[in-house]
Length: 116
Image (cartoon, rainbow, N blue to C red; front, side, top):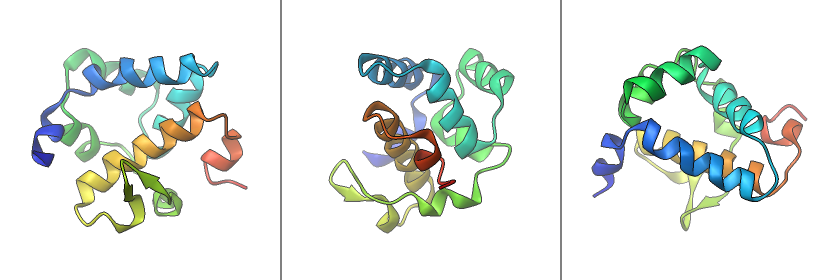
C-alpha cells in the first residue's frame, strides 16, 4: 500500500495542498515557498513537474537540492512521528505533508522554514 503513494503524480496532490492552505486563508505562494525550500525546485521547476505529471518518487529523486535542514522537521503526521519514519522516500513525503500542515495552521514562515 505505501508504495502506491509513490506512484501518485505530484500534479494530482498539489491542488489538494493548495485547497488546504487556501481554506485556512493562506496562499499558494506560501505553499510554493515551503515546497521550494524543502526540494530546491524553483517556480519554473515546480510548474514543469506538474505539467509533466511526475510521480512522487521521481519528484523527490530529481529534487534539485533537498534541504539539509529537513531533518529539523519533527512532529506527528498521520499518527506517525516524521523523524522516526525509516523509509527515506516516505519520510520526504511526510516532511512535505508536515510543512503543508504548518502553513495551513498559520505558523510563521520563519518557523516553518526552520530559520528562527
